[in-house]
Length: 351
Image (cartoon, rainbow, N blue to C red; front, top):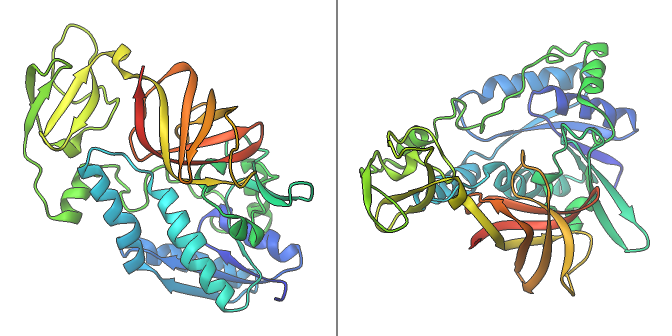
């Protein structure tokens, strides 16, 4: 296979600079944009194409809207209906960017897929495995959302931004006169740009979500909620309850259409069970080991004993109780700067 790289280009500054760096590294490059849905993507595709043209690169657009709806949007809405809080960026990486797009790249004879993620990939001769490492810019590190990359995917993925800071990336974009050099970063899910998940789910599914009861741990009714999809685990505001001290959402029960409410101390857990696991540094964990575990993109790593309890199951036991996170979120395991692996949270264990 020749030294050809397909560059996943979103129209943003990171993927634009990744394209420039990959070309500078000597690869024969082609830009590629995934069309995932129809609201604001034409602008993004046009911006990506403009950068590609400036770099003298061919540019392709792939229509993955049907796959994105089925694999990401439908699953996101269905999980929310079950009281879960999934991370759709992880599903998109698994199914679309490093799934369908990489398949297309390989089918077309490209040796690599390059993206604008902030993380690093290295090959370890001693282990005989590809490794995923944190970015040098700790504030931008995106290794958390890449934990699902397999050995085969890591082997043909380029992450040119892993050694750079965001400031350096913007500086390169300025030097190359990219129009997106100072483009603002979106902090929202791409298909819910206003952050109103409940409105999106109602529109996407066409379902209605009736009011129900707020209950405490003992099952006593405390008031009425607006519909299950308006609440997430750990939420503090928007309940309209006066309980004498700050109250939090501690549980969601779709079967009874109830939202369990408690206090800060009720949010702590002792551990997790993970499914849909992927291990990177080793093919399997042969014995329990202590690692650092991250339960959310913005959360800090916490020490925990990690044990593989089945072919697709990990048990996480925290050294100290931790504030809970939603079912469906990812938990990622680190050994220093190395991503050991991770999985999706299937169960939280009571404190």
